Image (cartoon, rainbow, N blue to C red; front, side, top):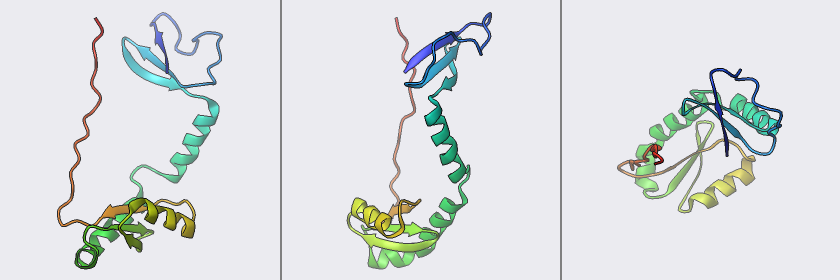
Length: 136
């Protein structure tokens, strides 16, 4: 990804004559990323995605709540398997996560799904955040 450093004396809207259409360009000021320029097709795809996935996605919360409601029964019958929830309903259960997803997509099309492994104790994943590396 290309990076352009903006200076206070330059307008942030005049970044040169080059047209950036092939890959995203990161804009920085004082060593901090402040914006990005992306190809128009990527921007349009993002806007379409964002319209379908609003912040605080109510659908996802509904599916998570359905899993929590169904979990006691799933623990009795499907411990260690994966449960697929769509629109608040259990639609598939099985051993192989990817197979379940593929089968559900064949049945309903490519839609949002809540997929969770049925376990007595939830796994907690530690995903470290980005680290700043200082160049010398």
